[in-house]
Figure 1 (cartoon, rainbow, N blue to C red):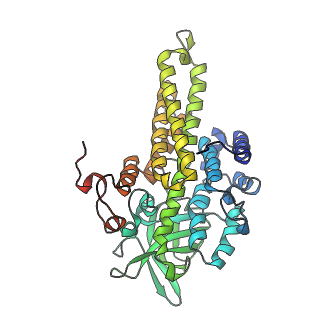
Figure 2 (figure 1 turned 180 degrees about the vertical axis):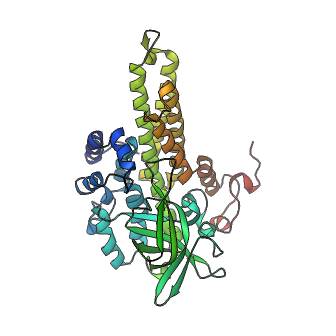
Figure 3 (figure 1 turned 45 degrees about the vertical axis):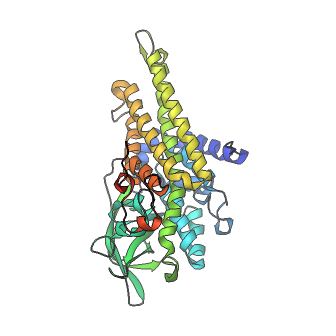
Length: 409
């Protein structure tokens, strides 16, 4: 595989890095997370209109640039390096691909051009905070239990008075407090014929309440979405209901590759700041970076970041490798961020220093899209490493990993 970047891809990365160096520093990030939107609206408009980030991977017929997931991953690597709070992940990586895959021609024509130019932001709302399961990253999503399974809980949908109505709530919805459009996963058909569908809820709407939550990582704004007999529009055609879980899983594989690149960017940003500090901080009359023990620790971190970057770039070209690349990148981000705090000494964990922000990003992402061991366990189960496991078995709730009855020593 040729892993070299094209001239266009390198230009995307260089241009975005230069822009974020000027307008996405630690001070700007801290100010952005305190706004009502949870991000800088002016910078978001600039990223959308000047660089076209939300439409990078959208078809040209809908106002996008027609690029691939690789270009989107490169862009997210740079936003991850700066820990930039923005609706890019929720809108372009999670919501837009689902609208493209499942939406009717009228829905795609009405929604995708507005997401491409940044005037419409969107968020994927799944009940129970089960984003990783809904996207098929840590478990098979066809079992349906993550969305309530037709029982009490989750989000329920019913057709009444010529339209769909939703009732329930979803926790930990990424950018859910400010998104102009919600894609809500809900169950319909009751318990005997339960099935998961996706619905479009425009904001504001009757019966819709959105509450921004206090999250560990301020750069990832999360919200609770409550729906009380809220009007909604079915995404796609009712006959395509069987494609919803498949579309979620396909979106999850690509999203995992993009998230892996973003986590690599965060790890690289933490490492760059730590190396710079090690060159400046003096102890015993010399820079601490000149001590062999510190050199070895930094070298180990560099190797870990580069290995995760290679895995992320490969996954961007082959999304099937996305979940494993995400596991490797999240692990690298957690270890590098932890070491950054240690190597910064007494100031690494203080509120005034940005090192702790990288720790929170690593921990928060693993809570949202992991954990690492479940990402690997599910990938291993699908690969049959723990015995003969069929997708049908997983769909009916067959246990994964070590629960398959195979002793692992």
